[in-house]
Amino acid sequence: MSAQHPRIVCQFSCGAASAVATKLALAKYSATHDVQIINAFLANEHEDNRRFLLDCQEWFGQKIVQLRDEKYGADIIQVFLRERFMKGRTGAPCTKLLKRRQLDTWKQPGDIMVFGYTAEEVDRLEDFRERNPNRPVIAPLIDAGLGKDDCKAMVERAGIELPLMYRLGYDNANCIGCVKGGEGYFRAIREDFQEQFEELCRVQDELGPGAYLHRNRKTNIRFSLRDLPLGEPRRNEALPACSFFCEIAEADYQLSTGDIPPDRS
Image (cartoon, rainbow, N blue to C red):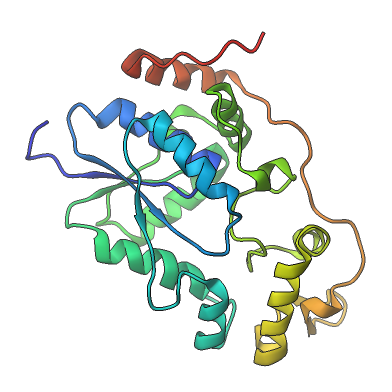
């Protein structure tokens, strides 16, 4: 490994996309670069995310560095209450304070970041690069043409059970009750995680209308989660499918690391 190469830093979020992006980055760069894998611990994620992290750590063959906020106890509820808002024009304060701030403290000049953007998120990558021209990033999933369902299937084909949130039908393994979710998402949270839903309701009770996440489409008036209207919860219960792109990518890391997916026939 040459000392002149910058570090390759994989941001592992306990999701399928970041897992596969990390696996591909390790296969491509570990022989020539110092590849680091980092994760921001969040107290509000489902506990099964930690099980998934350990399974992926074994798959990667490398320790995942877990960063943990101390100021807010890595707890989104404490962030909302102490910062007095839940989501603003520039995003959610929990992302900035519990994730980005930890990374900013840990990173070194010249680090090349590995992002888990999928083939559906090319615009997000282009936007990031446009806004951050001096921050080098790698997007191995986009380079390989891999979508979200491809990543889920690749994780399963490696013999790793997906995080419980996926198995319950959610699109990601974020915190339970992610403030970025829409009305259908929160209907599902209200059904599946009553305690966490009520906790978010109590935060809105304390902070008031400025913390309301959703608007009435007819009146344009914001409403509390307590007033979330009845309707269909948003879940994606279809089993993930794997396209030929993921098989190409799997071949890349299997040749590099000797991994052979379990026989599912």
